[in-house]
Length: 355
Image 1 (spheres, rainbow, N blue to C red):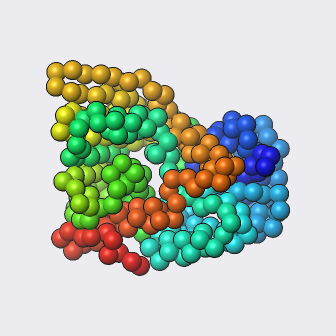
Image 2: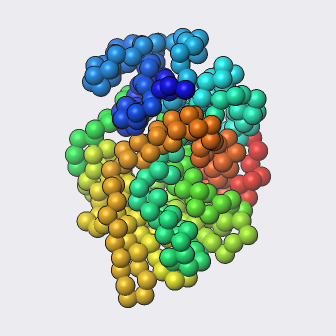
């Protein structure tokens, strides 16, 4: 086939880190932009210097035979039905995380994907972020021996610089509505970390958690989640903290993450994601008294660029890409499990969450 014609659906804050990967790929074309607010799509086209089709109704995208694929950047509760509709038209689907609000939604999408000639995947930029790719390469090579602990720490603080992707009012509104969004930061931001854990170490059999509830539905810090990977002496820990008076450097959000992968022979640190909190190399390997550092590209947008490239190349080659319906369901179950565990005050097997 020639170039893959991609329609970007939903021109909100996340679209501006999604566009570059498709625009720079030699085999993709940003063919259409779709948003219910036409002016928002037109402004994006103007800023990008492109002349795509502009649609205000998703049905127009589906009925355009020139559209090969959709990138869904819409609110979470819209993902399942929009994904299914595109798959039924044999249009390839890449949707922002999560796959949907419920496991039943994930199952519906999986059925549609199995019946379609098109590919489905959830966009997960962490799985294409160069420092995490380097960490996985080191882990898989045996650089730290047998891994025993995955530790992830999310810091949320006060803006130091103006964001390159400011949050829109409607993005805040749907994220704060429990009927549309089943959780706050542990769900919305936690998905990335849980997807990374599944990618690195496979399924999880037990989850415990303490999640703080505040007057702000989205703000769930301080919180902590601990889990055990299936059939392995391997634990995962996610800590979330909020420091409203602490400035965090970064172009995108007043948030940063720190990852530590501990093994029997050494430890790996990944010191940044969306922010630039630490004055450290992005990847560090500790073995005994030796420290080795790795200078990879580490702009947060790099993960989105890699995800876009993988989607385009998967369409052309016919190869399924990461975060298919099955992996997305596993990740969703793991993302929902901390809420159930926190409410019950006991551990939960995420595989038992079926609705």
